[in-house]
Image (tube, rainbow, N blue to C red):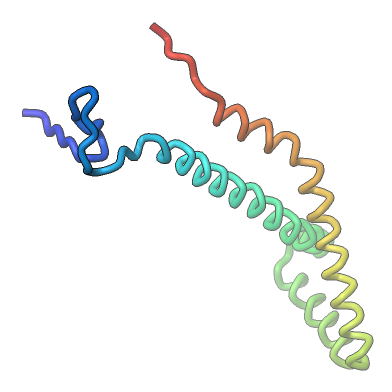
Length: 134
């Protein structure tokens, strides 16, 4: 015996024609835009998340390749860099960090602009009304 559950949201309100009794309002007219908004938010989150992971991961990959793939050597160079900037005056250290943040933000913005047309095409193709095939 198959399990078939019908909730009040799965069926239309059954009213005779010309009769408008007070009752539950049909939810069909607002469910599709709500689905579309949720879909767009999920796709935009994945889109921006992938860009920021790439922007933050590529410098790490670059410096790991410079270290020859050896994690010990990579962390030794990272320790030397930190010791160098800890010994510098705090104003120079803050300036370097601000320039680094600005540079990474600029790179992320350029990647977002570069990939935006493809993202919009993907979203519009997914939200386009589908024709029923008989």
